[in-house]
Length: 306
Image (cartoon, rainbow, N blue to C red; front, top):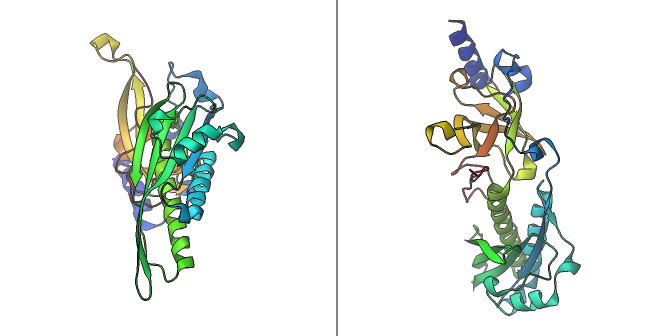
């Protein structure tokens, strides 16, 4: 009976007022700690940043150089803001690569050996149609992105993003709207990169007997309010013929408050789950609030190999 009453109290707290983990009591579950004995040592230390080189092109749309610059700066800014990437200095990009991109060479054929980076992002305006009328300009634009691994010079991710657009009242307004579209496309692509390459997140603490959990990723990983997450443990199934290290999902939740390097999550059905300090967290697919435009749904891939 006490457990039911406690659960009802937490539910009432969520329903009756704004999400406020500071006001929640510290329960017995909140003192429990999950320890993964086989976890990589890097989880307890500073994650080493991967170096990324960004190369952008306006392709066949030379009159829209400013849009290419906006695409470039947005990619660099967003990637540099993540906790696990470092954008390399422009001087490390060879003229050969820039010329190849400008001439439309396929990313697969670009020699990235002269770039001092672990990954190369190639971005360009793929198509752009502007339809002027008596009082406004309407347009449609598509941006292409390619994510290249320098280690084997292989394209490991491609994406074409058509961001939402609005009509522009003048040529100046048109450029501003195109710049905004480039920013949205760049941020959406970066959110997908973050989802695929983010190292494992962990629960830092819980409140309300596991009803609220603070996790170790925040704005620096591209998540936002409304992002759905899954909590999981790592189990050893080798004794039953399974993978030696496998994910065991224990709960889901929704991000309610986001800080720069952490976030608070409302845990679903906390009475029947065992979310506690140390368990792993991943972002669920079809998650709302992950990325800039909310037009694209992204999810974290598996963070552990067998």
